Image 1 (cartoon, rainbow, N blue to C red):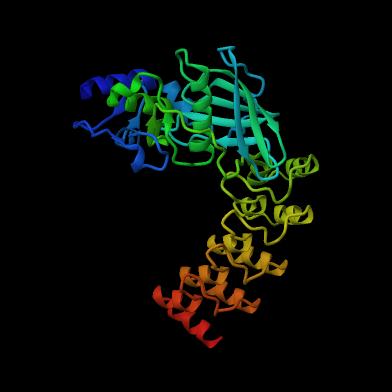
Image 2: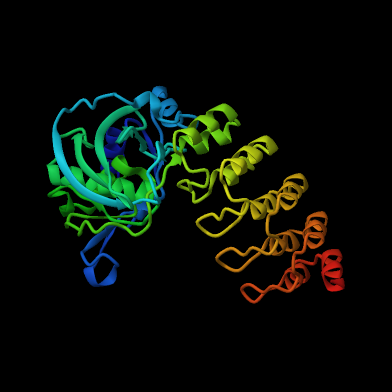
Length: 380
């Protein structure tokens, strides 16, 4: 296979041109004993992580970048072109519930898919075309969901039902859960590594790093599947009435989004005390932890906002709460050189002596040359 052929193939499969280097990259197989998945996998990173997509059709580019403000509700009820229905039989853990919202939103041309969840259905959209390819029906089972059946197909050509299941599984792992996981290669494509890499890029863009023709066990990932819920989106947009409506309909006020943050963390984007008040009044703990253990107070400090830091401290936020690494809000403020925020935290009882990763707020301030903060912390 020539490099020119690969370039032509990428143009054909992606609906446009592709910026490439002059020298063909090395695409190699990694043996079963040398990777975490126990089957031979093709390392397609030289193609998928270094190609830049481009299209001669301006509509494709517009479509690909059109999902930033899209909550996916416009795709509800849209049927895939292919009417074939096949069983899926997949299971994924969830955190209390899988809320209506976005599972993956493309932010650049090399993101080939958008994935939403609404009204018990997952909707898989080819981003360049804004075209619904597959709809999958979901059954809630307490601490997990089951993907029962799916309608449609992911590739433009016919694909085996088992291939559809494996692609759906891969898309949720690689896109919604941000896992490094091998993409399924269609039967026979493994004989030409270059052609296989080209297919991976045209199908999955830069979200695929490895691929394999071998079936992998469909063991559910331990990481819970979460959406950027409609509640989170309404919070980020400052829509107080919509937030009230979603809370009334059963969205938990402390529900974590796909990025591991609660609505109260998202409210910091707008610096909106009214939104803070609403979420706390409706049940969000003031120190609701993110998936990494960060509290909203820590995020307010990280955002260098004296006003937001003051609001959370005045409403009972714990200045000595620790994230999973043991770091506090004061660690953050001292390292960032935020003297007024350091003073605020100390005045509300923050301890300058707590250690995390071998560092105290004082040692971080000294290491960053923050002499005024180091002097203040030493005096305490």
